[in-house]
Length: 208
Image (cartoon, rainbow, N blue to C red):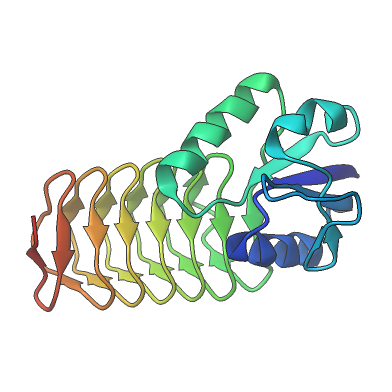
């Protein structure tokens, strides 16, 4: 069993370390975070070993690394940085998540408690499927997407890279959501959304 280094000791990191512990795949789990202050720093009971740039000191001891950063672009930037350095970036999947065996997934993904991902969906690098979200059949989540808690996607929904779907939002079947889109909490998406739009409401309309 390898050891796991988690980048980011914020609220998202708390959830990641608890899921990683439930998975029982790592002997030792530790954090790097730029708020590191002393050798006895801890987060949720796990050690913070140093600032993010100190990763070279720990590369021999920690072969696996996960990016626990909620902000989409920064998470992707770190994902590719550490992938290119040579770290293995695993998927972090809560044991209660239900995932079809026909789902295709890349690396650096987290799927949280009670989430459901149905048949033939595709999840690309560094995406987040948060607590109790549901992704129906044949959806595509491109890199760096964040599907917040309680989001429901019907079948054949395409979500562009770095888009953020807010808590409790819903998307009807066959919708295309562009890149870097922000969907407000509770919004109901019934038409395609172009790149870089912010949409809110029921039915959702653009604010920009």
